[in-house]
Length: 72
Image 1: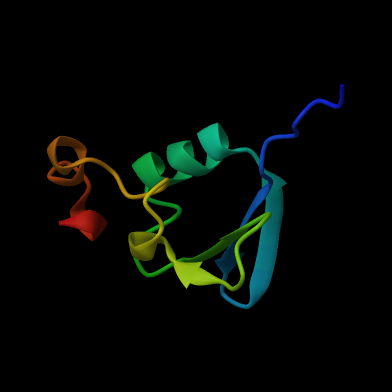
Image 2 (image 1 turned 120 degrees about the vertical axis):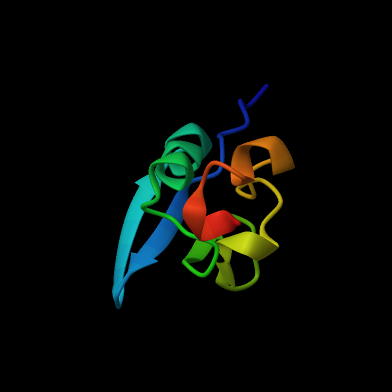
């Protein structure tokens, strides 16, 4: 039986692609402000790059967003 590998994530810093990183690290970058709602992200299996605000796995919950200036 093969083991399912977790998705690898990338984000853009300017025009530079940064990654691969895991989902937990990507979420930490959201909390730290390094990935904002307009930062383009991509993960294994996604058809195209999307702004983080359009990716449910990276969008902070409402109670957290109010403490993240970029996500208000």
